[in-house]
Image 1 (spheres, rainbow, N blue to C red):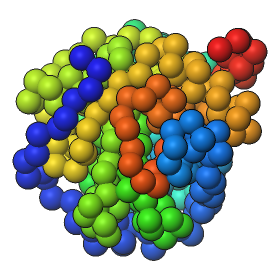
Image 2: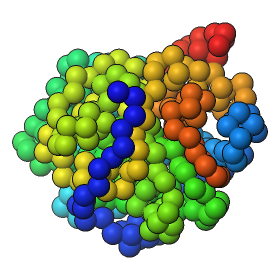
Image 3: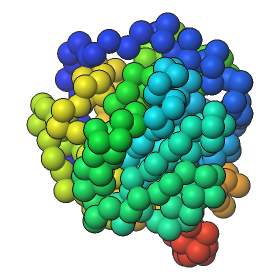
Image 4: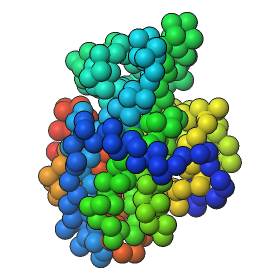
Length: 332
């Protein structure tokens, strides 16, 4: 199944005001990333297609937004004990940056599937990295242990209201830059990004459609939405490594918010992701990682047909340089 129309029900509480408050905190520390029109995609699709270049953000990813908001809302006691997180790379990098900024101890737990460039990027910022097991679920157990035994505050990469609200600041930014949008294509993994962005955009324009895009192997949120509840999905290697991992069987926020706020979920193949990375470099002059290319890939391969001005969110650029070279050198 390549496409899923999401059934709606009321999600957990996330207020538009939460995102507005987050913006007052986050805006001091992040870059306002540009939006550009893609001539290549506009010509191919026959509609105005824009790109949000969040790949140009500090740390190379949107994740810094949620991380700064979450750490800023810690109590003095929590700051003293430090923070711990599970990450496939970009959340860890963002949290490490925010923790370093505020002089807080930070440990990032990661599986051995995470690319080395992302591991080294986190260490360079000053966080401790613990590599645990062959999947994110095993790494999650270590993060839980540190939280329970050492009293560190666990900050989820997605299932945390402060994180979601922080990511939602991206939606406010998009709306101010181009309010006429009809469709927005957003990478989808655990749901923190898409839930925050969708809440912000739909609060300002209820008629706007938000399309989630994930890879077609191990897409946990997609399979969970199809099942009607959070389920375990086997993690698989993917070019979109930042989108891998589960949503948590005890998911508190993003499963319900995705049901409520996301209009459609589409999947892209590994070959289509590779073409998206290739297109971003040669036609848009942008370096993106696999997760940053899925929205472009969905448009290139007609996974959903937008009517009217539309935007693809390019969420990150943290790709291994040798892998990127091989992908852009390939003929498509």
